[in-house]
Image 1 (cartoon, helix red, strand yellow):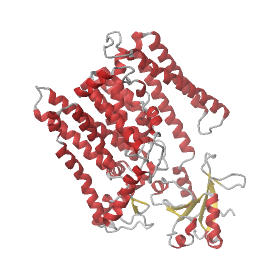
Image 2 (cartoon, rainbow, N blue to C red):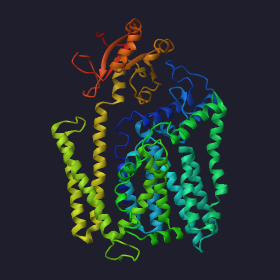
Image 3 (cartoon, rainbow, N blue to C red):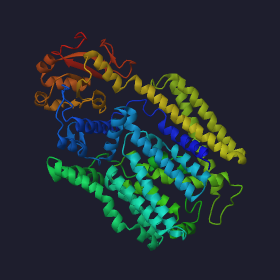
Image 4 (cartoon, helix red, strand yellow):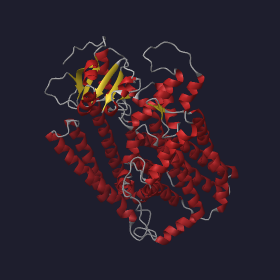
Length: 600
C-alpha cells in the first residue's frame, strides 16, 4: 500500500475519534473524576497549598510534591481505585496544553488511535493491505470503541495494551517459525508483549494479566513448547509486575494508615466486585447483549463453528496455533471473566474490540473478492456470501428505524436537546446506507465501493451525534454555570458547596475541590467547613431537609440568587416564581463582593 493511501485510510479511521473531541464539557461522573484527580496531582506537585484563596508564593515541599504524584487524591482523600498511569498521562497533557477538555481526553484518544494503527499493522503482516484497511475501518465504527475512546477513562489505554500483548505474541510465533529470521527477533517480540503487560498493570491493575494468560492457553493448546520457551512467562510475569509493585510499596510507605488503608481499597475494588458486594452489581447475562451491540458490525461477520465452518476445522486451527484462535480467545476473555464477576460496566467489553475487528476483516475482504476466492471444503455454509450482506442489512434497517424515530421526535419537539437541523444530515446518512446496501446486493463488482459508502455514512452518523452532543452540552453545562457564578460573585475560582447535587466536574472548572454537605450531619459538618468565598448549589428537596435541621443558622448565612435549569439557554436565570428550578444557587449573606441584589 502506498504511503498516501495509508495516510488516507488512517485519517478516515481516526475521524470518528477526533471529531469535536474537545468541543464539549467533561461528563459529570467518571471522566470528571479522572480530570480532577490529575489536576490535583499537577497543582499539588507545583504548590501543595494551591487551594488557598491567597495566591502568595510558598516554599515547595519536595516530599509533599512526590506524595502528590504517587498518591492520587480526590476531594482531599487518597483515591486508589486505579493505578496512577492514566492520571499521570492526563496531568502531563494538561501541563503541556493547559487544563482543557481536549488535554484531558488526549491520552485516551491517542491510545485509541494507536489501537487502530496496531490493528491495521497486524492485519497487514498477517494478510494484505486490503484486509488491513477493512480491519481498521471495522474497528473505527464499533460503538464501544468510538464512545469510550473519546472519554478520559482507563479503558482505551487498556485496550491498546491488550492488543499489544496479543500482537507481540503473534509476531513472536511468526518470527520463531521463520528459519530466515534471527532468533533475537522472536525474543524482541516476547519482550514487547510483556512490556505491554507491565504498562497495562499500571493502567488497570491485575486485569492486564488476562491477555498474557490467553497467550499461554493459546500456546499450550497448540503444543508450541518451543515458542513457550521464547515467551518465558517464568521471567516475563514477575518482571512485568515490578513497576506496579514498586508503586504499591511507595503508596503503602507514604500513605497515612500504611498497608491496611491501601489494602482495604484494593480489596473492595477487586475481591468485593468479584463476589458481589462491590460497586456496579449486575446480573450474569448483563454483558452479553452489550457485547453484541458494542462490537457491531464486526459481530455480524464472524463465522460460527458448526454453522459456517466445521468443528473439525476449528480443532485444526487450535492445534496449528492460528492467530484467529488467539483473537477469538482475546475477544471472549473479558466477556467470560466479567460474566462470572458480579461487578460489571458496559466498557468492560472494550478490550475485545480490536480482536473482533481482526476476526471480521478477513471475512469481509473474502466476500469482496468472492469471485476469485472459492468456498473451502471446511465451510458448512456459504459464509462468504451471507455474512457481510446480512450485517450490512442489519445496519441499514437499524439506521432507517432510528432515523424515522428521530424525525418524529424532532417534529414533535419531545427532546429539546436535538435541534431541528439534525433531520437533514440524518436523511443524508440514511440515503447513503440504503444506496450502499443496494449496491452490494445487485452489483458484485462494486462491493468494495459499497462498503466505503457504508463506512462514510456510519462515520457521518458519529460526527453528527458529536455536533448534537456539543450543542446540547453547551446549552446547559458546568462551564457555563461556573462562568455565570463568576459573573455574580466576581471570584475567579469560587469555592462551591453542594447539598444533594453531584457534579464532579465542578472542581475541574472552578480550579478547587468542591465540598459536600450531608444534611444528616448538620450542624457538625457545617461547623467544620471552610466557608470562605462559598457558593452553594442545592437541589430543592435536599435543601429543605438541610434547612430544617437548623433554619436560623442556614437562613442567617445564605441568600438565594438564582437557579440552574435544563430548560434555559442561559443556565442561570433569575428566580421568577413560575420556574421549576433543578438546582438553586445560594451565596453567603456576609459576602460584600456579590453584585446581585437579594431576591428574597
